[in-house]
Image 1 (cartoon, one colour):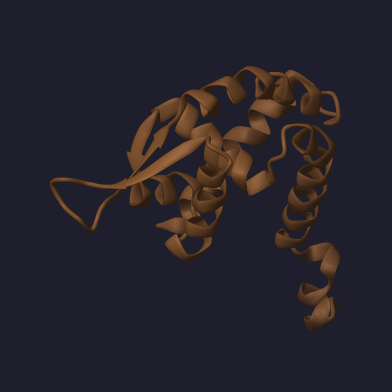
Image 2 (cartoon, rainbow, N blue to C red):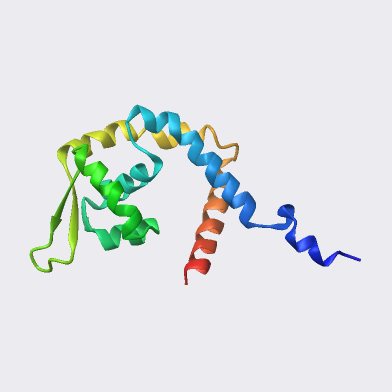
Amino acid sequence: MKNKYDILKLENQLCFPLYACAKEVVKKYKPFLEKIDLTYTQYITMMVIWEKIELNVKELGEYLYLDSGTLTPVLKKLESKGYITRVRSKDDERNLIVTLTEEGNKLKETAVKIPSQIGQCVKLDLEEIKTLYKLLYKMLKGVTE
């Protein structure tokens, strides 16, 4: 008979390998991101800004699953580095618009190498990566609804 406390074993928790894997993958980014003077959170923020060029802070937070309290210091740092500008919307003063600068766009040229460098650290084949990607986004959608 199974012990009723087996469910509390770390090995039976889906959350633990997700947490540990995310932590270890982010750690793999560190040497690559140090070369371009970004933290992981700054890097994923820049990824959205490189794609969108201009968007408001609320939209940015939605893409990254980050609240404004977490995002504000990240944006201030990116602005101090000259990669973005933050300006209040003329239509609605409550909206803060984030825009990519020329300097931020130049950084994109260096950063474009990082995904393939990280890909070499992940010991999964292309099909496994695609499957994991789909499953993680399905799970993310399920836990955020």
